[in-house]
Image (cartoon, rainbow, N blue to C red; front, side, top):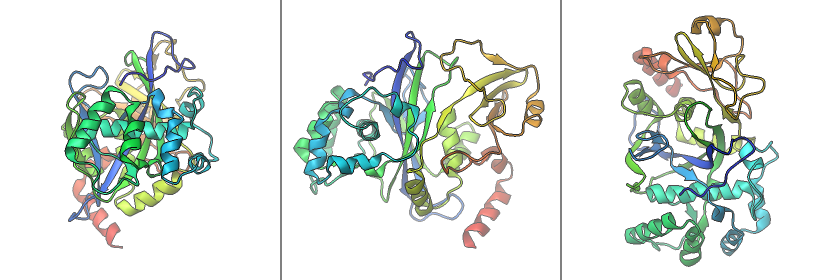
Length: 369
């Protein structure tokens, strides 16, 4: 699915750039103890042949298509009782993120079209369909696989699917979470990506698309981070950042309530800036004292370098929002500022993992209070 539109506001013409939508899928977990929380998060593993992040685990989702913004969707939603004015309630009073502002004009709001894209891509990749008002028992496994193939070959058939089967995409179940812009100097393919978060009491059977994916992980944030710490679970910085943010929420219901309210406050935009030091790489995020006043979105400037130790750079800063990456060790989160739009500060999992017994006792006590 490579038909997404280019954004020439931030990219050189020789840079392949696309808009992407990802979903953080949280599902309740039965029979669990207190230590690792009561929900699980879904990850899919990209196969070896992928040109972008091969063999890495990612949240479900993918690139947008023009058909995700077709006016034909109004008819689909209208048949389910949702007027155009009702759909416009997806737009909030919060400042729109760049990828909403830069999206070329189409027939429907970007807040709607991007959610449709996330739902479509997730259906193609995993067979999980977020939909409302579907007729009962209307889809067999064979039906699902047939439509996945059809839509994979032609994204415009997603609207045809709902016209024939009934129902509509469950766009209200996707809550705005965060957006990331691929940094410069890390390859020739870049994406402007928004993460939504959604919740399911029970996860349907996941059958990943073997043409794009080669594996599946469904586990608690803490369990996934333990695997990452041991080198058994490979994710990119955005996924790592958001897993550590989820550590603030051991309980499914608390996270869901937070996401529903916070999602109306705005979607922050992260463009990571890499700085080379003698010890390794520092990745600074917005709000850090080292973050550039005018970031180099195009990659025109040389890679930033500083001839200081990471400890010196840390001690000289008042506001910290960065990762420190030393050869042979895990990426270390250093943050002392609160995010925008009512979000939660990520938890430094490396520090948690250094004393897991103390952390588990503390977690047990906290949950029993």
